Length: 492
Image (cartoon, rainbow, N blue to C red; front, side, top):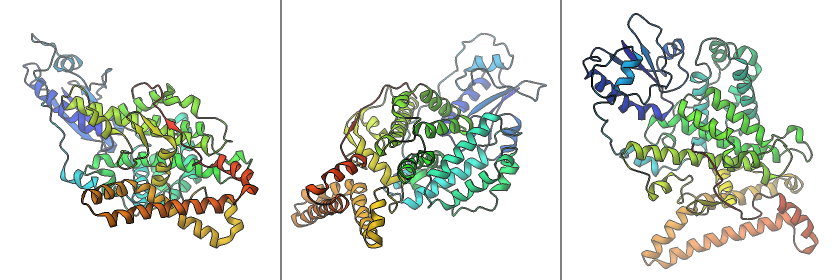
């Protein structure tokens, strides 16, 4: 008899389960009844064909094989929290005496950061890296996540993939050129692509990526973090891209706009059918179906609206992402033997961090929606492509558009590097250096004046244009400061 653990590079949960699996093997083999039971592990990233043959769809998975039976079976309870007696019972072996618990618990280790993880914290991610990481994860998913079983996609999976590709096609920025080529090839040959993995790989065979590895800013020194980091990047890019896409359509052209609920449903169905981490998949889909974070009230099936309504998709995803971070932080505390995460742990789990976006967080459990959305937009959308550059710029000609883009680049730099300005000011003040601090203040004032100048150019001067200014401000994503608070949610 033997047991077999199937793991994958994608979910970190595989790595977290490894110590438990090793300890379980030792405990079972320490008993008289289990001394001949063998324990093995297989990487489904390397041995993909074996995992397909064994019907493995989620990771990590544990499968049992009894003597004389090469088929094996997956236990009803998943096998991930089994003890000695559970393993013996699944294999049809009666235990003589003893308790039903393992002989000992695996030693809990504090997960100290590696040198690479420490170096990654000081690494500033560029847009080029972000889009490249997203492209690598998309390409990885095509090769490892779409076809986990032999045979064609079933009807539900086929529809989920079709809608996912259509959403990506309309919301990803043009800078992700290789990914767009992937999508075009898949959509052009979709009926054939849905029949087999060979057909899918043949369709994208001619498309080459600039890199097949994730950047340090994504892996944080741990290759197992690369895939999910790049995948979350895709999700956030889509959420901002939806706003950008809808805002660029002609007024009243709702046929070409995307409803926020449709986009969220496409995301949900993709994760449900094609995300390999079983625990992650169940948590996300369960939270989604429970309408956590006000999803059912915040998102709409009506594609018409304004930036304020479209951006709810991005803000809902921001809350969902933070809930995942909190859950992972809690699980980490449990692995390290801590009763619960400390207040410092909770703050470290928040994303973006208070240092990366000081204006985002207004308290331990509250945030500024406008600041959060602007941070997301500055992180996940190309700097030179913004919805504030619209119809009025066409009338002003190339020079006006050029100057406006220059102004917006400076403003966006100030927003995304606000933390660095604060740190520099505090350091200079503590050192008694007054003149350099004054320079920092002047730079901030200059950015403010540039914004004022941009507003005047956009809205006009004087009371003559008050009506036009009010109407345009109502559509602007920067019009007011609204504060977000946690909505009722189940545990992810």
